[in-house]
Amino acid sequence: MTDPAAFTSDDYAARMTRAADAAAAAGLAGVLVAPGPDLSWLTGYRPTAITERLTLLILRPGKAPVLMVPALERPDAEAAAGAPALEMRDWRDGDNPYAGVAPLLGNRGAFGMSDTTWALHLLGLQRTLPELRFTALTDGLPMLRAVKDAHELARLAGAGAAADEAYGEIVGVAFAGRRELDVAADLAGLLRKFGHEQVDFTVVGSGPNGANPHHEAGERVIQDGDTVVLDFGGLRHGYGSDTTRTVHVGEPGEEVRKVHDIVREAQQAAFEAVRPGVACEEIDRVARRVITEAGYGEWFIHRTGHGIGVTTHEPPYMVEGEKQPLVPGMCFSIEPGIYLPGRFGVRIEDIVTVTPEGGRRLNNTDRELRIVR
Ligand code: ZN
Ligand code: ZN
Ligand code: ZN
Image (cartoon, rainbow, N blue to C red; front, side, top):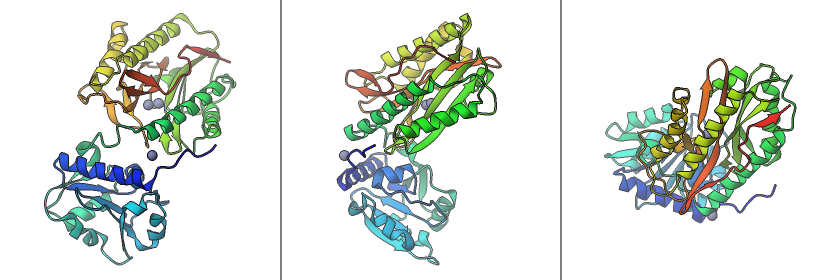
């Protein structure tokens, strides 16, 4: 699998400037980012070990970005694609790294702090700088990574196409008589075969397990006559896939067909509602209305979707109360489901991107109830 064109230090510089400007517009003094998806998105730097030693990116409006790193990790940080855009500083074991960054932060205002920062580091900063305030980055700047550029969209489309190829093969394997875990291992292998470097989840919810949307995969042996929810995804070239199809082992009965038709109709209606300016909550409402009118509203027990990018779950969320309007370049899942406790579940999920004309699906396998053996 050839690597697509890499992001350049100019790409990272532009992202860091955008983040600092967005912080200023939101009334924040700046943005602080510890290792995790925000740091890799902003700088291209992915420390191999995320540890008790402080690594912190400091973004302030109108000032050069600073990366504070442990001295022993400085060579790795300097090799990151975004390093030319960074002012690099280091600290040594025995120093107080929080005192080291304090002069850069001033003594007033609030900083947006990356969600995945260890509490250890946030508490260290709070103790050292008691006059500063900190807010979660997804509270302060929820849309920072939400609108993807063409280069990011190409990677998300590639991840979606790879997940589709994995689905195309998984429907050919044996289900009946094998454990959920075995089918999940097949799915993980197929995601890797089609270019994923990281598998985040391989849900195989057979029979009654399908009624639990959080069920991953277990010891249950799949039976003839089971409905099976397959929800799988991970990262390919750093960008996420996440798709769900529901299959049936042997000929389905009338109720399974009916419930599957309702979910498919809800998924299609929500997809057709996608266009710039529509509020995220409206996507949820459209899907929910179809399921409620069919009499299954109380069994659709989660939000309709979530954003996706360098992580597989991020803002924007398609949920009641989210007023954020859709913007071209946003990418998110549309994944309504119906879960009948003790019996079976059905979910259908595609990643969709917003274009000026409406939605475009990044998953394009058929949404029929496929019969497996
Ligand atoms: Zn680029
Ligand atoms: Zn999913
Ligand atoms: Zn999802």
